[in-house]
Image (cartoon, rainbow, N blue to C red; front, side, top):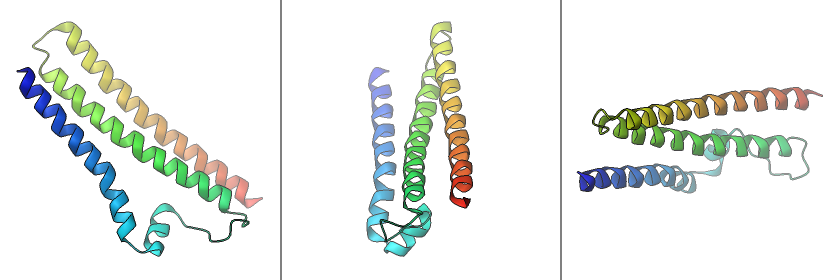
Length: 126
């Protein structure tokens, strides 16, 4: 049973790492204009007024992607723990709390991204 669990967790980790690496490989293969459009725009001039907001948007987008992938992996792993708990109340409670925390993390990232975009819009208008 442990070997099956380790095999499943290993394949999930491999799948998770490949999903993180594939967008980077795709970004390397695509033209700069496509990448710039996908991340919200690029500036060639380092002294332009939008460069700081562009960097902040890029950092927030990258962190959101990383947290999103991590949360999805945690939900999958805790779902497997939930299914293999065998009715043990402590294991069921641990799996439920992990799922709850992963969902709360996703919500916090969405709220943080909304707040940052709102603030950047207000700051860039002045």
